[in-house]
Image (cartoon, rainbow, N blue to C red; front, side, top):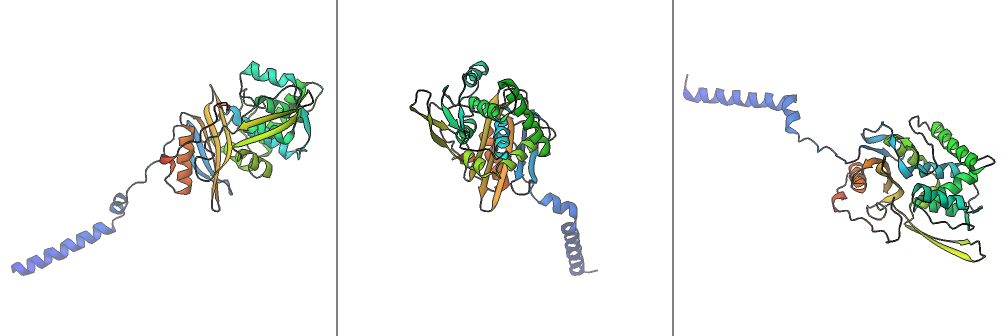
Length: 307
């Protein structure tokens, strides 16, 4: 056999072997670079499609954890779902201020004897995370002959609403998150998704700063200014809300939502050491963007509440 013929046969054999390798599924899989895994600092996290509720990402997403002041999402939702008169004036009781002192909670600094509307109280509860405002709402919309009975009744309404929304692992024992209130990342994001369907709620949580006037006990006018503790708002493109929370048992928590074009995402991070960074990473993941690493947080005024 001539050298020329041998060379030709080797060439054909080599080509055939290369073709077999190219067709091999194993080789095809290893040739594709693996997509980097999303990592967040939070112990629990979830990201949902805002329209369908479909889960897009989860980390220990079905484990119930303390939820801190994100509890006030349900407080506001119960009030709004009742179709409450938003212009109804509610007198501020000394008990609301005493509660803040007793529990060392965040406050809207409501002054005893002032009369605030339900609308103003929603801003006061959701922006500076005022436990005094949450107390006022619970006392107003609960039923019973005493403050204790009314607030207990209101918390029962919160639990009934959780059951109605299909959130079996979500439980409340306070109106502001100072108790053993808990939820899973997925269920808390679903609660937020439903709350954001309400126009008033959506308007409130998208507000960075709110100024209010209220009749004071001395007949004059009291002026309030409340800053939104959610620093993701105004820091990450498209963010439209919604609520911070932090206690020692819960760690730092954040429920957030953002819209770009016709796509809305809603997410939760519970017990995080970097809640805003985590939220930005999750939103990048959902939107297919890459801006989290360059995000600069909106600074809060020096006198703002921290939650």
